[in-house]
Image (cartoon, rainbow, N blue to C red; front, side, top):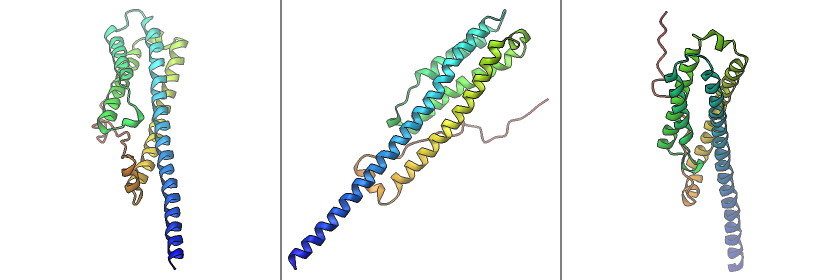
Amino acid sequence: MKRSGLLILLGILVILGFWGCNSYNGLVKQDESVKKAWNNVQTEYQNRSDLVGNLVNTVKGAANFEQKTLTDVVEARAKATSVNINADNLTPEKIAEFQAAQSQLSGSLSRLLATVEAYPTLKATENFTKLQGQLEGIENNIKNSRKIFNDEINLYNTKVRSFPMNILGGIFGFKQKEGFKADPGAEKAPEVKF
């Protein structure tokens, strides 16, 4: 009788061991998916940053172009590239800092493109038109990468917060992560005036 009780206990421990290992590996896999998605987001932002340099140099060639607009874009680009967040440190504060720097660059680029409207010769330049088209494509890629990142964050956070994974995750240091949110004021409809 003692021997069969010991075998049952040993069998339960083996099953729990396998479950624990499998669960831990699932958390690691999901954490790595979040890191990969974050790296893809950063890659798209880097592509935009690289393109901005080419765009600014093309626009500089236009005579009498507004220097303040170009300076704003260059400064916003420098700030956006200086904010670097590790995928292991996706805190709400870090994500907000990263998002603010990228939003500033987006705003500067929008002002640059709006200002370009007053320069028909620049708009007609093949290089500028090509760069502008690439920028639009990169902006779409950024949106898609951010969506995929948020989807991965959602899967990870659901797994980390679900019982009994929350206990196992807590033991091994898996914490909830922060994703992208809308910019402040984005919930308000823009006012259009003609």
